Image (cartoon, rainbow over the protein chains, first blue to last red):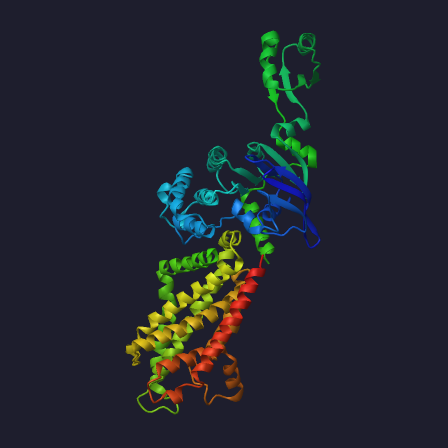
Amino acid sequence: MPIIVVENLLRRFNNLVAVNEISFTVEKGEIFGFLGPNGAGKSTTIQMLATLLRPTAGRALINGHDTVKEQYAVRRSIGIVFQDPTLDGNLTALENLDFHARLYGVEKSVLAARRAELLQMVELAERGRDLVKYFSGGMKRRLEIARGLLHHPAVLFLDEPTVGLDPQTRSHIWNYIRDLREKEEITIFLTTHYMDEAENCDRIAIIDHGRIVALDTPSGLKQMVGRDVINLTGRNIDRLAAEIEARFGIRGKQLDGELQLEIDRGELFIPRLLSEVGSAVESVNLRKPTLDDVFLKLTGRAIREESAGSAELMRMMMRRRRGR
Amino acid sequence: MKNLKAVYTIWLRDLIRFFRERNRIIGMLGQPLLYLLIMGNGFSASFRLPYTPPGFSYLQFMYPGVIGMSVLFTAVFSAISIVWDREFGFLKEVLVAPVPRWTVAIGKTLGGSTVAMIQGAILLIMAPLVGVHLSAVAALEILGILFLIAFALTSLGITIASRMETMEGFQMIMNFLIMPLFFLSGALFPLRGTAAWMSTLMKVDPLTYGVDALRHVFFGASSLRAVLVQFPIHLDLLVVAGMALVFVVAGTAMFNRQS
């Protein structure tokens, strides 16, 4: 039985359909990514899965529990790290963890060891007694990840876990996420609008305008757009083309004085190519399809990488409006 | 049992935060002290309350009222902190936890009440300085009444805060609800002898009964009691308890309904 089952989930805000009848399942132990531009319906979906928002129609099961009928069972099964920090800055890191532990009924006998283990993992062991308001954005995010794991959830939700963080901290966070799956046997459901981050997921659902437009492994998605492309230059392009066709049975295309080959697994082909016709080749360029290409093909536009500033501002406005 | 623990968790957080923010304690004490030291002493020098014998100062009359004021402000501020929690995101951590919403509302109400009662207790220590003498039993009774008043007012605050998204509306609530509640409560002047329209408003203000209950205990032993209090003590307590009940139900219901 999959750990997350979503069936025809729909959410409407007045006339706006934020999430439009999406269905998917997530297997235990997967890192499952929701990729899409801001406003595509990622956060709305997470909020419905986390029982914070009632679906207009459809249903979702987490760890076998219905998110509407068995709210508390679902809430005990999940840990969640929201886009914006949800820590109490006037409490210390340990106090924030203790607060969480009490609300989630974590046994006192195991709490101290669990707290220490998690703070160690997110490299905050020395900062336990410091007030959270003096923490940097990256430290806060790490503490929130630790807090989300405190009660041994079956699924950890991460809503844009690296937004607003510097590249170094981002890669750090990703190390924790990958470690987690091994250490905690946990399923991770995350949303992102960073293509490079989505690559880290086992499977990705691409969401646009509230619909899932594709769902596959990163390499599976990339195969949708086409094969790898190798561009070659050489002194005599015509002879090179003829030679390659004769030896490998691949007919290339000549473009702007370059020879272009379309092929699967280009990185394996290049050594063979060079060992046979290497003397005739001046330069080789391999281009593999990216998730950007996939998104472009599926939606007709690129995911725009907004500057952090305006994205943040937007989110704050949205948050205020949502709450109202 | 589990729910009780959730209530305790929310309550404990408010107390930890209260004792950590010394500036807030000092700030919250500053206002009543200003009222007592400057306004109280100033008025005492110029005015004498009708029906009271010479030697009874305005300061003594005002003292229970100022304690009531301190409880009013502290209780409402504590409740309004829900709005801060919402703005700073912390409320989400609470709302997604596997505990019923009412435990959060009740925990918050008890937290605010406790903090407000402690503020009142700190002011109570000054009693000898303003010429009011209290027995230990009276002091305990006062703490009990303060807690009841604080509970009612924090519940009122939660009812309001559950509907507030940002702190922008706070000034409005301050000017059109909290200050009138305070001014009409009889904290600064007696109900007796005011114009009919005002005395009606004062009788509608639930805080009037809270302050009146405090005066019952403060002046219980004195011959002035009959002059200084307006209503029987059981009516006072009944009104405050009624207000507490109404608003704790309303506040919890409102808090439940928010998304």
